[in-house]
Amino acid sequence: MLIKNIKTAIIGGGPAGLTLARLLQQKGADVTVYERDQNPQARIWGGTLDLHKGSGQEAMKKAGLLDHYYALALPMGIIMTDQKGEALFTKHPTAENRYDNPEINRNALRKMLLNSLTSDTVIWNRKCTGLEPVDGKWVLHFENGTTASADLVIGANGGMSGIRSYVTDHEVQETGTVIIQGDIPSPETECPYFYRLCNGKRLMTAHDGNLLVANPNNNGLLTYGVIFKKPEEWTDDETELHNSDRMRTLLLERFQDWDDRYKELLLSTSSFWYLPIRKFPLDKP
Image (cartoon, rainbow, N blue to C red; front, side):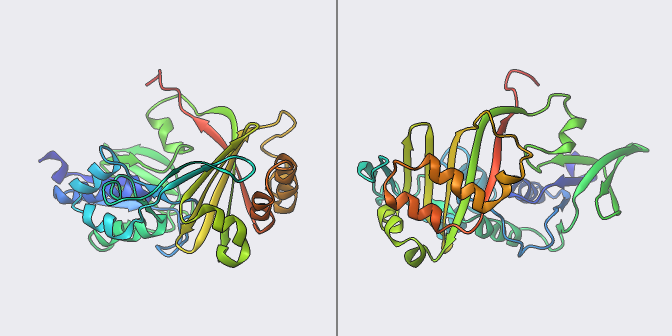
């Protein structure tokens, strides 16, 4: 096979990059993954992932890892509430739906994928800053001053990847929507009333242009995001948007007519992360 005779570099050690490395190694390919995190113990920030039948689970099946995913993932129901904390809809996990899309912690997923690869597949502390064609190969330049070469380079390092510019001139577009994310260790004691409202399920609440999505069981953390249209007076480079105390005040203003259990969630959060939601145009290559 052609792929056995070339050196492949994958930029990004997230779920996509590591899964692709696994699939290629099953075919005998020479693959190296370059990841900007310092080491495999670096915590991947963000909520849990749910892999669905027909998409993510198909990739796990082809990689021979589906049973491992099922063993690590947690089947969770869904509870939809109004801003007063009244349940509008509840879906319970059952024996029939428990494998539909169970939730898995991002670091647990990374560890599972890393354990499936040959040793030294991933090179850590390698943030790729650019590519250079030299004598029919690609030279990869990294932020720490090192370089590497490959015959084939695959970009799997996220929506803001600079590597994508080698494939297309189209850039990401602002959606005008933002997500504010936070997490709470030991939610049973830090925000007990909101934790009990979740009742072990993913909670979703939409009211007055605000969408709250929370997962009370993310490897010991309660992780959540608040999504809304960015107010016109906000700009991405405002220092206050990255100041947790200021962000808490802004969110409490948006939640002023919500039940106190939601306010408890915000008051119990020590740090917030502000993320503008962007997209790529689907009608362009």
